[in-house]
Amino acid sequence: MNEQPGSASVVQSVASSLHAIGYAGIGHQASGARMLAISRHGDKAVIPSDRAIREGKYPLTRHLYLYINKAPHQPLAPLDAAFMRYILSKQGQKAVSQQGYIPLPAETVHAQRQALGLD
Image (cartoon, rainbow, N blue to C red; front, side, top):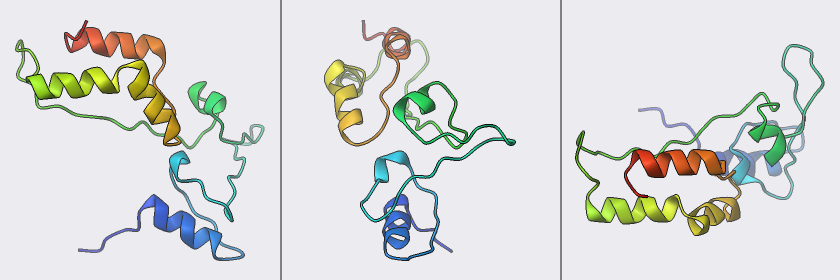
């Protein structure tokens, strides 16, 4: 199996090499490596920021998903429900932000809490 380096390894390699360039998640910023503005199809180059990413203006983004094994028409298991309540709480979304990632919009949090029967 040929394993690919993770984001932290990529950033560390870029930071230690004068002319290196790499791609990593926004949560893996480090001194010695800087984020670059990029453009899509010749549009104005955009620097990655919370706002640019949220508004879909930064062209190199992806969502991180969390999956739960939940039976249809059944409530979440108690431990799963507690975890999801935390993740979809203000404190949970603050923790996401503190780790360098972009929290979910309030309407998405509300919709997911409703879909999981947490409200």
